[in-house]
Amino acid sequence: MALSRTIVIAGAGIGGLTAALALAARGFRIVVLEKAERLEEVGAGLQLSPNASRLLVELGLTERLAPRAVTPEAVSIISARAGGELFRMPLGEAAAKRAGAPYWVVHRADLQSALAGAIADHPDIDLKLGAAFEDVAPHAHGLTVVHRSGTIRRSDLACALIGADGIWSAVRQHIAADVKPRFSGLIAWRGTFDAAELPQEYSARRVQLWMGPNAHLVAYPIAGGGQINVVAVLPGSWNSPGWSTPGEAREVMEAFAAPRWPLAARTMLGAVESWRKWALFGVPESCPWSAGPVALLGDAVHAMLPFAAQGAGMAIEDAAVLAGHLSLEAAESEAGIEAALTQYGLARQARVRRVQRTARQQGRIYHLTGPFALARDVAIRALGPERMLSRQDWIYGWRP
Ligand SMILES: Cc1cc2nc3c(=O)[nH]c(=O)nc-3n(C[C@H](O)[C@H](O)[C@H](O)COP(=O)(O)OP(=O)(O)OC[C@H]3O[C@@H](n4cnc5c(N)ncnc54)[C@H](O)[C@@H]3O)c2cc1C
Image (spheres, helix red, strand yellow):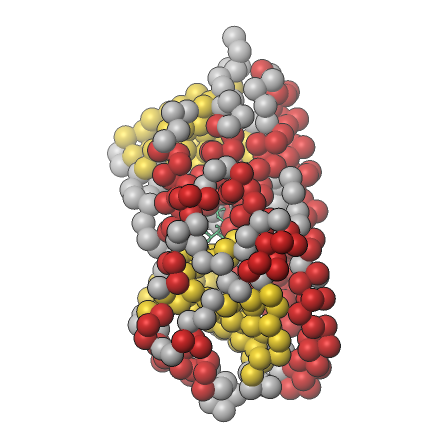
């Protein structure tokens, strides 16, 4: 008996939903399991550089996404030590022309709902909410994937299982139980404020990156420009899992105290109504990408520090590469599926590792203190906007 042409994807985050659309376009029937009852508006802003936006455009998402996405004109690199902007790296038209796709910033919920909307319209994709992946058993006809909705256990027959279930992946437990996320010692604090609340300079269509002693701050408009997303990154020892733990404004304001941090940064932080925090973990580079007919994708295999702004981008790229390797012909045999999934992992590893390392290195640079911060500022100024943009070519110019 031939294998089923169904692929089960665990996780309806950005990676899982993109993979569902990309694999359905290759002729597969897709079941997406999502443990949450609803795709809620948890989270805040995500940056989608051209390497990722290009793939979303190719999947036909422009109409659903563009009205909610913002195209920033530039990234302002600002040093708390120098008290102002070091320079502005052009994004907008400049980045789009160079890389052939837009640079977008978007609320995670807007991206997720654009993807979910396209999935709802697709006859070959079944999104099951409130269905947590629980177990997988291989047999002669493929895999039986077991999931739980409340007290009820159900199963689906599939030729492959894709674990897109995020940093605390249950699928990863099945193929690499010894791989555990590692705490980085850093905590991201996130909040938003109404763009109309502060003078225009605070809500310009720019990504602002503020570097300072042992901390940094990123701010950009989301929700069509109506809100400003603020993320402050600080060292700390609190390391509970989760994306949305309420946090005390006082703690953030103390970390960004004057005179080390200029008034403009403190004004922006002060405008945030309520803070949420999440501890920053990474999945070790040694994590395997696949085992037999089971593969991992996105944060499940390579959760990284967000300082290269590529967490969502890498998950979207994974989805495209995975779909490029899986075909209905490959799915005719177990050996074909396994070979395709192995090739997928091999195709992704080197690039993702380089991005993970870049993110770690950028975090160290952003948080430099004393004479090291001075040297950093001089070096960044000397680099200038054009050379800074060309240094991103290997990330933004990528194609599957
Ligand atoms: C609620 C939430 C809020 C976030 N907010 C931000 C943010 O503000 N800024 C930022 O940079 N990044 C945020 N992220 C992370 C960001 O979305 C990811 O780094 C990136 O998009 C890669 O996504 P992913 O699809 O690999 O994983 P994720 O986006 O983490 O998605 C994983 C999905 O799998 C589901 N899942 C987990 N376990 C199971 C299971 N056993 N069975 C079925 N489903 C399961 C989860 O509910 C989730 O929907 C957030 C992630 C989540 C889950």
